[in-house]
Image 1 (cartoon, rainbow, N blue to C red):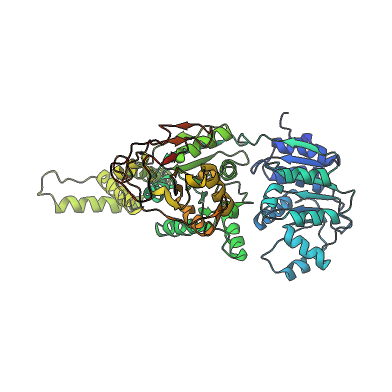
Image 2: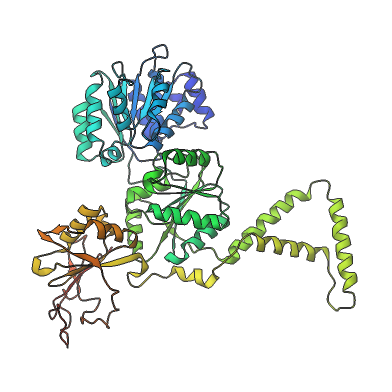
Length: 595
């Protein structure tokens, strides 16, 4: 189906005018397919990811069906996060810019409920809120849904992931049976299908393929960068690309705080956003970012849900995301509203396999580029200065500056007239000024050769993985899947992020990403695997192949956790020449992910 023009969607003149003011002409695929059936009164299931225009897909028809003269709640939108509730309400306010008498109110935790109760007395027709706070108001009877015409579940799968199933059921059971039910979700797990069967009537099912980026105007790149060089490479990318507004994603809150401090110390205008911040502060940061009061927002995936700023020029995956869908969510923050955008992903070592998974999932190409050199940064800075000079050359009022330069040159030449080859021209003065400005514009702590080394892959697990010891092994009938299941169940670590697994008779080793190691150690304490209570601790560094005290080389045996096929010599490595407590000759097996 071709994308429709908003003029073809049978919308009111007021909404058409507002959409034109927002800079939109053509509807996105999810909007083209969703708006007509919703306007006709059908229930709908919309399967689409972030960045596809879901808010307007349900918001435009919701606004069109509101009766302004009736001052009761007619539309309820449930969202997983405060940020998404705020963002959605702001976007819909833009849509009803020329519609008189329609009021929208976001309600969410973290804001004083008394303030919301006061706002509810103004009798809004549209409520956008998180399930917990909506339930709170329903118990207080400050939100009454007896006259509700439409309920929308936005990012329903995320609400279920956050534990809102019971609240959603309670709300849906208390709204009128004849209401229209709209559901949007990136994925369709069994729980979502249960909800649609129970609460929707013959829904129209719309799907925008999630394995393909819906914004083709995003240029995607990756850089092979060691951990120690990431900050410098990020700084250089921002400088050389003239990026004015950007998003940087990290996998942990601590990482966000550390990177924000580091960038600020380098003179960048950067702020942090994550779940440990007070809601008032998070709202302030987002408001300032939308206004362009600072240039770089550094965030975690959860905190960034609901960020919808059209002017974001680039997204940086400082840490590669743990899940392919997160990658889509992240880079979908740029390249919006017909603009182009760039996405840069930093990888090291075996993270190349994660990147390949992402490319297969998104059916897109992510191109390898080299980090900018110091010379690239200096050239860009000089180019910027020369462009500013070019703009000023045509201006009047330069004569007094010319006379200053002329006197300066004459003085220099007069003082050095007895020296050979010391004659100075105004061109020399311009070059000296350009050099001064460039050198003062930034510090470059690393040499070019140091940064160029970042293109090398680590041959071992390196700094990005931590090796852990577990006191169970093959004698306990342990297989790799049991260890992976234990890690996933206890710590929430995605199974695809588990590294190599080495299983011996009485114990095993497993590699996990460095940033998850502490959580794995904490959550696995006293955990059981196959009915045996385990002890898990950080292993001492493993020696290189050929020098192992156990006598096993790195090719002692492999196991591909995706195909289930073994490789190597099945773990039957050479027998040790000398005994070692706890090891049996040729008793170890190595299981590695070949991705």
